[in-house]
Length: 192
Image (cartoon, rainbow, N blue to C red; front, side, top):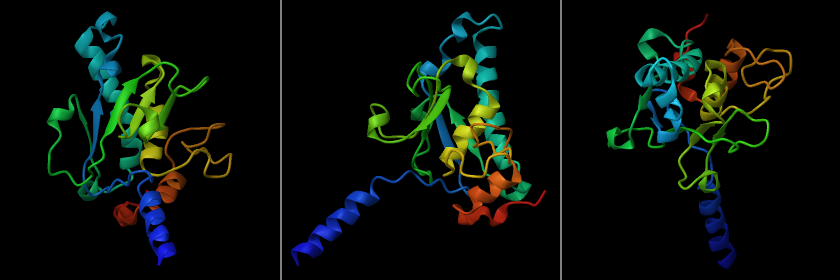
């Protein structure tokens, strides 16, 4: 009986530590932290143009994944400027925070996806960029791949996968195939 309770406790503890699963049939919410706008106040194009440019970089990276879906079933990623604007009835309860923090991802890393209490003061998933110059569609597509459950270098080198370190390109049909193995709702993917 004692071993039964220990087994149940282990299952309960271990099941709490997994990465979040985002249902592609419902919006995925991303919230910008104040640090995400650092440097915009000195940007020669102006503060609002700088913010619009950064949001466009994020959207362009996410779009690489979602453009494989048909128009009727196109997943949505929503960028909000405050967590106070999050809908209370959202299906995807986890929220991805976007921020800039130099050195957070380790030496030589320009961006990373972090999840868990050790990643910051809260346990929500984060996409962290080293500085404003590292916010690019390709980097965002790579980090968003982690949001969707993909690992680094999880396909053979030379395939041009966005998840590759050596020869990354853009999101490819192979990237979508790998992601769809993790998401049962991928039957909505259109064929290119």
